[in-house]
Length: 280
Image (cartoon, rainbow, N blue to C red; front, side, top):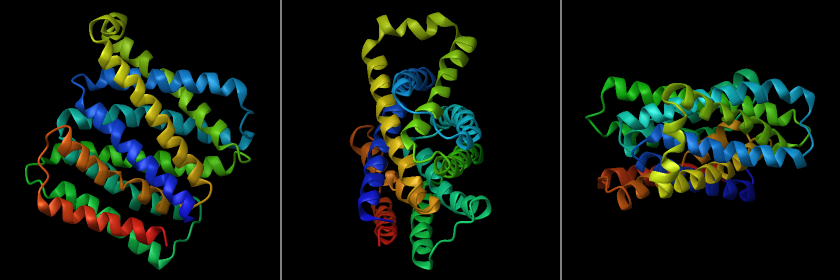
């Protein structure tokens, strides 16, 4: 992977860790995810007016990815309701690079070098070790986080193929896919009612504001990843993005007061080493 591309994906990893920490730190994560989705969908709708349409061949992937992202959002909220950030996040993100590599090989005929395979193995193994060091993770908690990881892998492979069929319109592909996020407030209102969505604008405007900002950060983070997917191998891009668990561990320790042991930091270094190998 080109160093410039790798650097941007690492930036996306930092942004990704930031918005996940924000989401986990909010008391009502479903409400927060809904307001994040509103920000993402609104910006995407405005941007789509000024962008050319993606190629016709990309549209099935845009639709499929948009729907999978909604399932992912719901799964992520469920995971964060059950587990600490330092547990749910590593399981979800650590399982996805290996799944993405397998999916890219099956559906996009991607080959990967032995060196990059080592980097992916170090990152995935290190990330999963971060989670499994916690002996108090129940089977149900692990399954909830792993389900999120499967959704991550699924939309990554879909987008990796779809963006390559968009005639170089990565930005247009991204904003049209993210317009499916309008489904999140629809689902929220159907489940809790319109008042539950709008009342926080008066009662807790700061929380709504942080969620809106988190949505913009999320849009930028995954927009970078979609752009990178048209240039590099899906598994390598996915693994490099998932180095965000290192930043998530740091954010969890500093801002959420979650315990991070010395062993966890050693595993974080293993993950970082895998990222360096991917950049070679």
